[in-house]
Amino acid sequence: EQARLWGIKMKKSKYFQTKPDHPIIKVCKPNSYYASLLRDSFAGRDSEMTKICQYLYHHFLISDINKEIAGILYNIAKVEMKHMEILAQLILQLDGDPLFKGGEDSKSYWNGGCVYYGINIYDMLRKDLASEYKALKNYEEHLLIIQDECIKDVLKRIMEDENIHIELLNSIIKDYFR
Image (cartoon, rainbow, N blue to C red; front, side, top):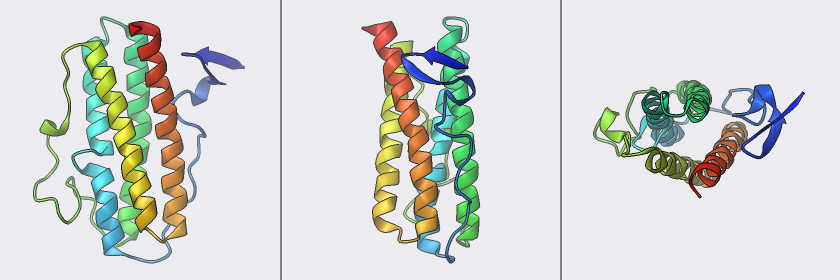
């Protein structure tokens, strides 16, 4: 059965990601530099960890104001959790440590200061959208550096989900605030 949500037509079970499955999580060979790059997307300042916490915080704040938007943010956070799990598996296979901090250049561990808390729903959604665009940019940069095709396939699949999140957030902003 098809459902229409924010002008995006998809099967109900797939609102928040393009496909239920990701490619096999594997690497061609260990590479500590690649592990460090991926750790930036795992738990750096602009990371899956940050997006999860930001989406959940925004969900908590607006649940009483708009349950539909709050539910969408919660479900996007769940997909971001899957991305974080995938990145952790890749980092481990690369002989890295999925610490809650960015790559080698990062001196500090992840903390709640990375989250944008916002001042109103519109402001929160705009920042959530900006976070998705930043994630795409980070993954695109990873694809330019990483030469492991297995990792590239996984990152491309994650990017498909991030594009769905961008479509959803743009539709919400358009429908509610323009």
